[in-house]
Image 1 (spheres, one colour):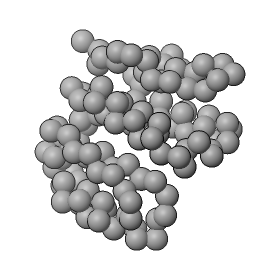
Image 2 (cartoon, one colour; image 1 turned 90 degrees about the horizontal axis):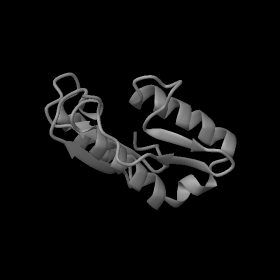
Image 3 (cartoon, one colour; image 1 turned 45 degrees about the vertical axis):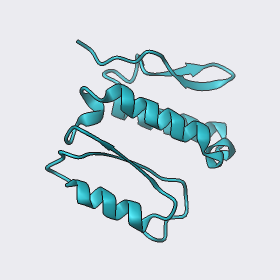
Image 4 (cartoon, rainbow, N blue to C red; image 1 turned 135 degrees about the horizontal axis):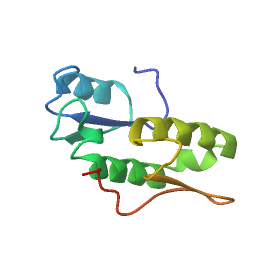
Length: 115
C-alpha cells in the first residue's frame, strides 16, 4: 500500500468484526497522506445508522482534495455509478447522489436512511 500516491479516504467502522479496525489503522499508516475516519458501527455502518455522516465525509473529502478537480467528466460518471451502487437502495433511482446535467454531481441534503 505504500506505493499508493493518490488521495485516499478510509472510512471504517470500529466494531467491524470482518475487517477489524486495526487493519484500517494499518492502511492509514501505509498510504501516505491518507485520511482515516472512524465510525461507531460495524461492517455495514455506511448503510445503516451512520449513512449521513459517511456521505458527509465523502463529500467533504471530494470538495477539499484538489486531485479530484482534475478527473475527466467521463471518469466522474464511472465513479458516481460505482458510488451509487454502494450507497443507494436502487441505483437506477438515486436518492443520495444527484446528477446535475451539464454541471456535475451533488449529495442531496438532507440524506436520511430509509425508515
